[in-house]
Image (cartoon, rainbow, N blue to C red; front, top):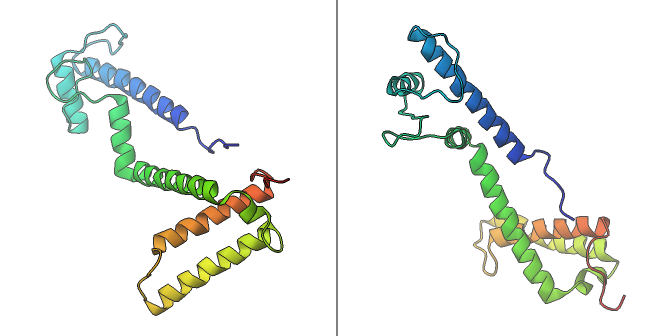
Length: 184
């Protein structure tokens, strides 16, 4: 069973896009006031070229909200993604998701090879078997880090992948969602 993340990225992006739409209207109203207009805009208003210059002054970018071909058209999505990327939010979350996806693929492939019995029928029970495996991985990792030795069999990354996936299996055992033994 997949759990929903604590945040809903689509909802956040939608809110940000609404904020940018509101900001565009506000900017246009300010622009109209500066031009001696009423400061009231409607969705049907055509944005004149001078408005783009006004926005460029505000942001230091050539942004055309009217969809014309000149300059760089930046949508609220483009601006939102640029802000998120500059802040580092997008980068680490995307990278973390890539790692989770990779961990999942490896977990599925290994469990297809091993089957559920290697965990379910471990001496002392599944959690004890996982504890022994985790101890072995951590002891190996500690030895390699303490001695500075170069791994000969599996990389440090492989070791961390195994540790993470043993954690996932442990959670599945506790939640009773890990596959049952073939003869159960």
